[in-house]
Length: 420
Ligand code: EPZ
Image 1 (tube, rainbow, N blue to C red):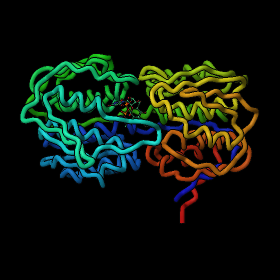
Image 2: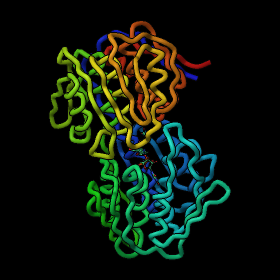
Image 3: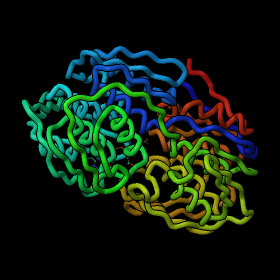
Image 4: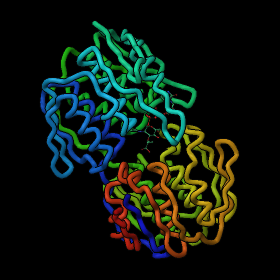
């Protein structure tokens, strides 16, 4: 297995272009199953997760072509069964359920298994499908949803930890081809949900209110092909902004939507960093004096849980005592033990991390456990004295396009060590 080796202490500078959003590309690729006609999606990041989605579409019978960031899909005929072998590699595969139910009025998909970041049920997705009139059966490790006829309904998708992103996507996609009007209350407001709704509307859907807590979908009989550009990846942008903060002389992220990253730039501004934004770029630089921070993760537009680990890495060397509370995935702290191996001082109290800032971190061999935790270890390695070796970097390749190469373009001394 590949490793990433980082020689820490080298300041970053310059600018970097942000790739298309993973969490937007996955549901949008799944949405192409809603029509027989060709769809063309641009700015699809080259990641193992988007490759998995292409494999699933192909397995379901779609013709898929891919060339440098553009994916063309024609799902003239589709199967409605997505088996374990194809689905087990990626939880987000669950978002083919909605399109298949909408189009074929039935779908069987392997139930997503356990996840290292915490309990991730799909009960809200299934509740939404049942409200549209589908019968739901879980057997043999598969979830089967079917309905001779679907009809619009009012559905509240808010759960114990707030709205569900992929649940909102799934119900929106099924409802697009459902007779009558569907109203989703307690909908997720993430920019990726808006991007999916914009794509569906280009296909002829009638969706209003995406980006608010109340989404209204007027069902149509059929959808047609469409072309779409994926929005920039706000989590990749946030990760590079933290890289610039943790050891930068000032870096600029380009091809970004500053509005989508506001919770992150506000947090950086509140703990000692200067932020300058223009229409599609953001520059972060140090004020020379860092300070502690109190942070809670929340659904959008709150502070994203997918940036929590990276902020732990940053705050580990900020002055003072910082406190982070994880409201979405309370157990999402696999990175803490590894950061402590690098000299960080952190205590976990339930879903809260208490971080005592230290003067310096030390390079060490560390183990990646999930996508964002691995990004946090790389960021800590950039700051640490000596060499950090991050293993299991396949986690990084799931969600970051060429992370090590991009950091190297900014001046990091970083290399990928090929596994034997
Ligand atoms: C999306 O996952 C993202 N993944 C995640 O990013 C992100 O962490 C998450 O939203 C929250 O922002 C993709 O978009 C592919 P949720 P999703 O359903 O949709 C609970 C990354 O690093 N819940 O919004 O699966 C759930 O357990 C990944 O890129 C239920 O209880 O997350 C969690 O506590 C990791 N029942 C909360 O809601 C349900 O049916 C939010 O989960 C569904 C969710």
